[in-house]
Length: 393
Ligand code: LCS
Image (tube, rainbow, N blue to C red):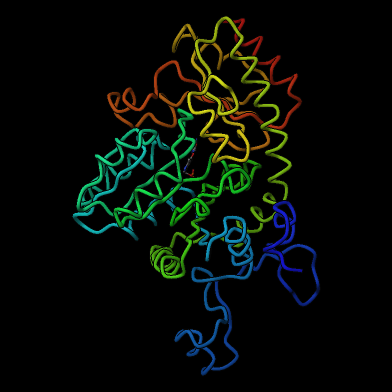
């Protein structure tokens, strides 16, 4: 069977398989730091690249390899690099692609630490960064300078749910000879495949939808071309931000149900978004599946579904947001997203608190904004919980 030609859900179940000596149905956890060589000569061959035998788990491990092969197939890339977290994916990309004096153009409303690590720490290495509203193509063109090396997009953006046109970005990036990097965490490979739309590198926090059970922190980078894959892989190995075999096993288990989890969560998210939009205490709702989303048509074009992330604002601002969050019984008040449980959080004071007040305002991360990650509980229970929470304001 050619797994690459099979359907997405079949790939979820079978693309991570390996042949082991006992025929186990799931991938065993090779919980070892190192691997023995059959001879001194074989050891030397492994190090010189003349043999693809395993050496040391930071460099490669059968359990981690199985997950990497699966992710490369799911995102239609040359190869995948599993890393210890989504932030390890972002920093491995920054450090692989940028040298002192290079410039990066990025979506302003991205996951807070992916921005603050650049602005507060990597500036010391001479990297320059410009954060802009990437929903406007002319703004992107104007931000690109002669020393720009990377266009870095997060779409839908965390937490504004603004959508950036991936095909248009790929066109600009390639005209200018720069690389397009896409954080695809909010969609997962089930809903959006940036490499197919012209991106060079895609990455995920697998802590979210890919693992889906709120019990692992993990990341992955997928490169379209071999040379880029090798460059990123070498950086991961030398920085030591590799995944652990047990972590890989848990993600291999979680990813099998990605499509059915997302189908269920996004069906509920549509109903939750419609409920919120019609509630008198709610000022606005941003969800790609609502016609009121100003980029509804673009979302339909580049995403295979609307996902299960919703942003909304309350008429009573931050005061109302706090009252709602303190009065929910089913939704868990916690950061993170993309798990089977419904989560709610307040980005301005939580995930994006390290972004300056002025930059938050400019990026649309306002005080009244609440972010909801809709889980797979019964939708009537999710809506009833929100209803009683909203009535308590
Ligand atoms: N990219 C996106 C879009 C994210 O939402 C996150 C984490 C990361 C990268 C980093 O991944 P990590 O290192 O945590 O695996 N987002 C979080 C959030 O919104 N709440 O808590 C974590």
